[in-house]
Structure formats: structure tokens, C-alpha cells
Image 1 (cartoon, rainbow, N blue to C red):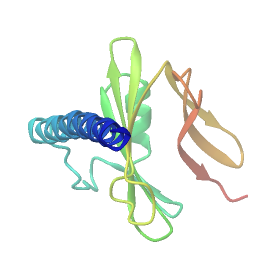
Image 2: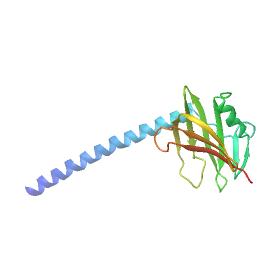
Image 3: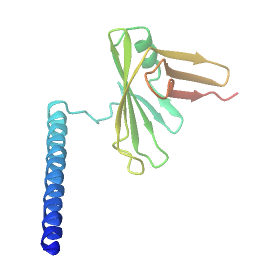
Image 4: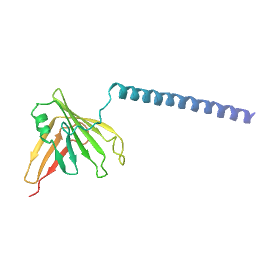
Length: 157
């Protein structure tokens, strides 16, 4: 009789665990479908435009003045493409949203890093000029980090 009770309890526990996994699997499937729908509805263009994008290729920077246009309000969005040592692009897209700046930080094309898209909301994009560098930094960002370096151009003395 004890064996029958133990077997019944074991069978009930097994069934409950299976149901829990099914619910979790269904949630994961729903989330994947939602993510895929989001990508289809809002595709991101990874084509690099050498005329419009700010490009940092291992310290050789082109179009950095476009960040000045963004700071001055002449444009409401600007993308910076910075290349890794291995030659993979990392995308920083800043967009003016009401009185704040949204940063879309995208590492999905970095073959040697973690493929993530992170969105930050910040107060301002600041330009800091010294004798040795020109730096563009987002400040007052929600969460961590509070400041995000978008671009640094070293100046040789």
C-alpha cells in the first residue's frame, strides 16, 4: 500500500512539473513571436551610410560635425558607427524624444561580443573640447551608467 501511495505522489508531482514547464515554454514561445513581430514591424537598417553616419574606424573619424548638428537641433537623429578591433560595427543611434535623448546601443553585429540592443534615455549630449581630445558624452542617463561616451577623437600634440 505504501508503494502505491508513493507512486501516486510521484506521478502527481511529475504531472505538475510538466504543466509548469508547458506554461513556461508557452511564455517563451509567445515572447519569441512578439520579438519577431517587433523586428518585422520595425526593421533596423544596418547599412552604413558614409555620407550620413559618423564613422570611427580605429581613430580615423569622419562626419563628426554631424553630432554638432544634433546638439544644435538641426537634426533630430544621428547615428555613430564605431568599429571594434576585429572590424565589427557597434551602432550608437541618438534620437531627440521630447526634452530627452534616446540612445539605441546595438552590438548585434559584433561577432566577438554579446549581441544586444540596449536603449538608454539621457538628458543631454555634451561636447567637451580640450587640447588632447574632442569628446561627445551623453549625461543624465537613467540607470547605469549615468554618462555614456559616444565618441572620442584624440588630438595629437
